[in-house]
Image (cartoon, rainbow, N blue to C red):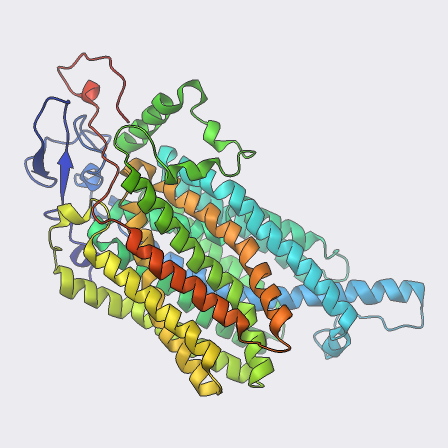
Length: 559
């Protein structure tokens, strides 16, 4: 389907306000507009009129989610495919270091040679001592991969509003490629490179936002390109790509290792593909924030913060970016603040559960049903295929049937959450709750898989949640908003695994389903608080009359 057909922009309307004494009026965005200037916009345009800045350009310079959907799918396959080889590499390196240290202390002890791991020495590494060291090393790497994005993601998200999405996407990609280069060097020279160099790989990926920022930026790019009433469908495509990467990436990487006989080949191939994707973004992907919008965003930031317009980028103020979820001043309201806080809380709960429950699920099925690699892989395939089907096929079809080709009342749907997004959100959360209840009650492996499929159908709630969030703030704050959302995701990635693993460890001896009962209660809470969201609430921003020809008013903007 042509993206121009699916995300039809004709007829999208925005309610504009002029000076305080003027009347409100509905003005079609794509009709009766003055000619645009060379930098892509006229002085009188409202900030919500985003794509008008590009209508005078040829199609290949106009932003569209089609430009980043395919590269994001490829990168999702890379992220999914590199997980297992990277863990195996860490096991190999830690194992070598462990036996090398013991060999120096006792020359008669075993020493792992250059090819021992590839030639069958893998069994030497399956000891409690090596496993403990690998667990501690991966914990440190995971903390770097979660804490650093928590610090940088909201700042880089805010910078994307001021300077554009492409520079941040490119920076994020450079950090990931830098980490892959180090991983490749370590894998190629395992006998001479210390395992601690792998921490630099985690650091480079984390300090440039890692996958958390990448997801936030592609969603922000889609927000710039897609009308508000179709954002849940667009976000669903990206979530579907993530699920495809998780499902197919490990399989493809496994075939590469089997074909080549070495995990080093995987790192070479993935680095080469990543470089190609980076060049594609640099050379072909259009910037989605026009020169006019970037200039206006910087001016507004300067008016809001005065001389300290960049103070929100201070890395020491970790939680300061969350203030975007609690706006005050003109245009805000208690209902707006309640909506933003509730939506962000629900989204964080869902992300935290996804991150914190993965290991618990696999450990539980091994303990309760005796599942091995094959059975667990079959379960993960069924669950992820269900997610992909609902996110990339069923959700778009339902959206098309309910909203129609152009959407019903698009101007209304662009002003806060509407009934459709709220309904999709609540149905999805209810399905996920049912899935966790099913996990806690399933006495057989097939019933457990069926519960997973039911819960996976509820994945449609995630794009609806993020779409609803973006509809509550002006266009020049979507990067800041989704960056703050990335901060919450990073914090959840730190806290959730600790909590859920602790519950499982404490109860596995007498009631192993306790973790699933807690998860079902968590989703049930999210479902209850979803009814606190009030539809059609948004940040009302009055147009800055000082920027309009014929006005000499020196009063500061109300924003």
